[in-house]
Image 1 (tube, rainbow, N blue to C red):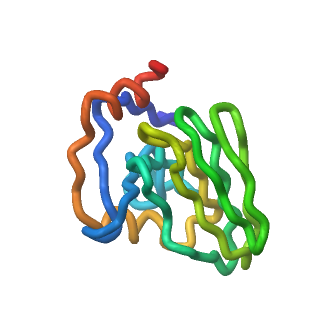
Image 2: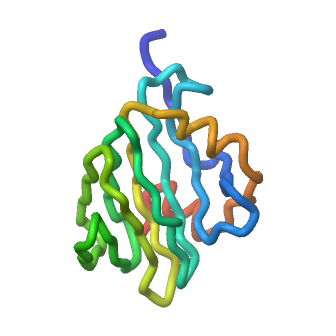
Image 3: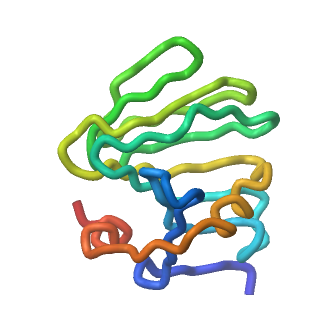
Amino acid sequence: MGAILKRGAELRGFRISPTDSNYFACLLDPIEDGAGFTLVVEVFAPGGATPPNTHRAAQEAFFVLKGQGRARAGEEWCEIGPGDTLMLQPGTEHVVENTGPGKLYCLTLMAPDEDFAALIRGGTPVELDAEDRAVLAGAR
């Protein structure tokens, strides 16, 4: 078959480091699906953020599904909310943080993968809660 179909109820969650305030529901990646990119729903707890990071060769894009946040690319900050897309070029140090009262959900794409999937899947499994499952199923 030339297609892969996954259902939100089948997805598993991972936290890269046990102390991280964000975690990932893996949609497609090179390890499980043979994709040349990694596509996840990234979930940020209230007040949570990514650690500052850069990617050598990959572009990373965030599409906000639900919640409010802000992002830093280099020295510039911008507010982000539902329907906003942010793309980061290789070598750009960046941070995404949740500034809202609830969780922040972003559809996050990393291309090429640059071992992002291995980093995620090598982390700590996370139980996705009812709100996470609802967002993954397309509910708002």
